[in-house]
Amino acid sequence: MKILLITFILILWTETLADHSPEPGPEYADVVFLVDSSDHLGTKSFSFVKTFMNKMISSLPIEAHKYRVALAQYSDQFHNEFQLSTFRSRNPMLNHVKKNFGFMGGSLRIGHALREAHRTYFSAQAGGRDKKQF
Image (cartoon, rainbow, N blue to C red; front, side, top):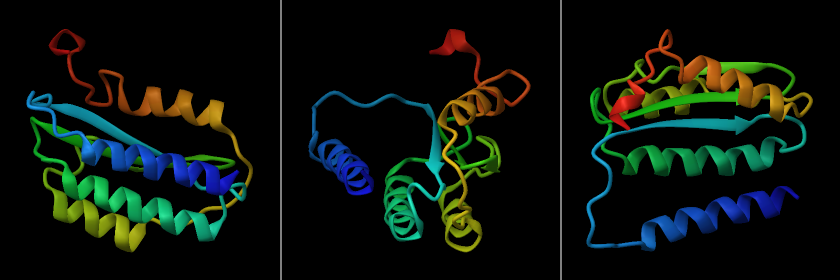
C-alpha cells in the first residue's frame, strides 16, 4: 500500500511537470501539504514524501500575495508545521522542512486530519483568502 501511494504521488508529480500547456496557470493559490506521518506510512516512505515536498515547494512561485504554502502532518494527532502566512519566500520554508519536519509515528486518523486542516488553514481567522477572489 505504501509503494502504491508513493507511486501515485510520483506519477501525479510527473504528469504535472509534463503538462506544458500554453495557458498560464493561476496567479495565486493556497497550497496545503497534509502529510501522513503514521506508522502506516513508516519512516522509510516518509523520506520519499519529504523529498517530493521539497521538489514541489521549489517549483512554486512563493510570495505573500501569490502562492502561499502551509504544512501539516498527522497520525494520532494533527500537527501544524506552519501556516499559509508563516513564510513569504521559498528558502526559509525549505529550511524548515529540512531541519524541523520529522516523522511522528502513531495511528492513522485521516478524517480527523482533514477536519483540522480545513479549520486550521482555510478559515478567515487563520488568514484564509476571501472566497470571492477564487
